Length: 320
Image (cartoon, rainbow, N blue to C red; front, side, top):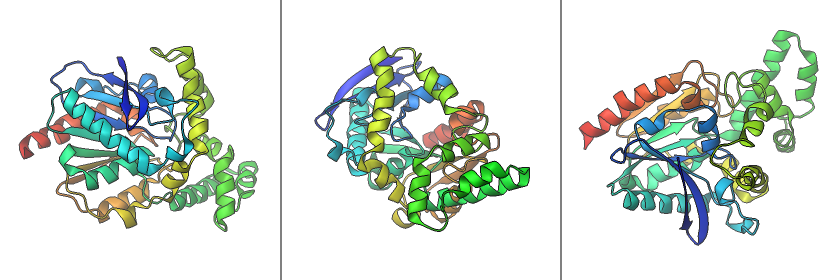
């Protein structure tokens, strides 16, 4: 594991590089969140991606290793993150002497990833969309209905009443208040449709492990959460919620591979599949991870690597 800092569009930003062999292809991994570095999930649930790639876990400006107290909140936008991602891509291409790299994005990161696949196809061999964001307001309402139905089915009217305190279906204000509450995440993880299918508590399985994250100083561990709180108050979160892939991206000119967890309601599985059917690309595949919720790469790492080795890397070699 190598921790590295570079200047990206005028701001010092950090990244983690993992890899077993220098001649392997390079993969840029765009984190979810915004705010939680993907390397935190990698450290908790090893994916093994570094066996096939040199993997760059880059932390967006204002988050994780890239958090600074004096960060300009006005520059915390989806548009700026995309510009930064292009700069990071070009840095990796030059640093590792590659013609192109591979691009993988998870959840929030897919708002950036799908745009780069559309606008910068010359930089990437392929785009791997893990829990692709499509239409998040619709996804949230689908998840809300599902959770109410499940709790009614189980006879847990206490949780039904908790959810019904928020008029998510009826009003935008109700949806906004619901998203700010602890009820959403609590119910999602209770029902196995959140970060992972088996995770019941973000505090126990993400927050506490982050305070012991190897390779990070005490300040850097605390900055993970400082950055998450900071990002939540900036426009980048609003931008990602307004992003609608159905309307915005109808065609891309590089291969795209969807990794979707059957139990994912954080970015609804059924909307991901619907969007896949609509999207036009020179090559596209949709992979359902039957035992996963929102993080299939980390929940089913063996299946992930089989797909990457036999489908993505093998097909890329044939297409070159």
